[in-house]
Image (cartoon, rainbow, N blue to C red; front, side, top):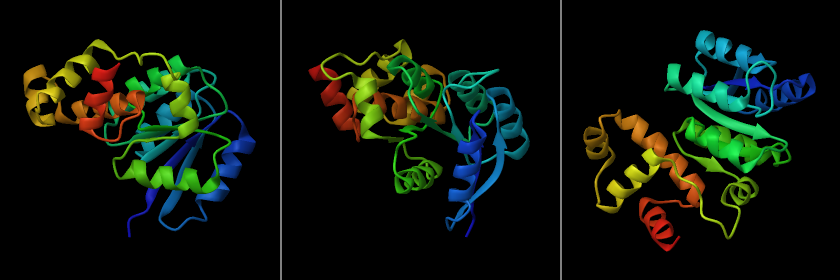
Length: 201
């Protein structure tokens, strides 16, 4: 079975050591590299081409949002999981907009992290309940970008990702990335649920 090749980027060596030790004991996951800042994370991602990058939001040289954007732009097949102690709702939203496939707090149980790596490698979006509450800021209206609103409008008309991509002149996988971010912001699991929540808000 092909292992999920993972890169860990965090400016604290004790976190990198701990995550590497944990993930290397898990069947089907292999840590192929570590990075101590955002610039090194991008550079090593381009060299190693991991399946999943576990990325801290607050790093020197290049923050998590910028690193996510660079990695996802240059390596569309590589997924990014944000793992943070604390980050503002805006920065988490920006990371999701930049193409991150999920976000967890560092306090999450080991089993949740392992599950998130596996699910993200399969192309799913994983947002922990704690992070989702931060993003949604219960009672307020989630902020969607102009492009996300356009895509959501097409979804309400029953159009497929391929049809939306053709109409907007973008790649089909880009539509999927935008939808993942929309689902995360709205706390939705399906297209129908996302539409219902958006209309309600």
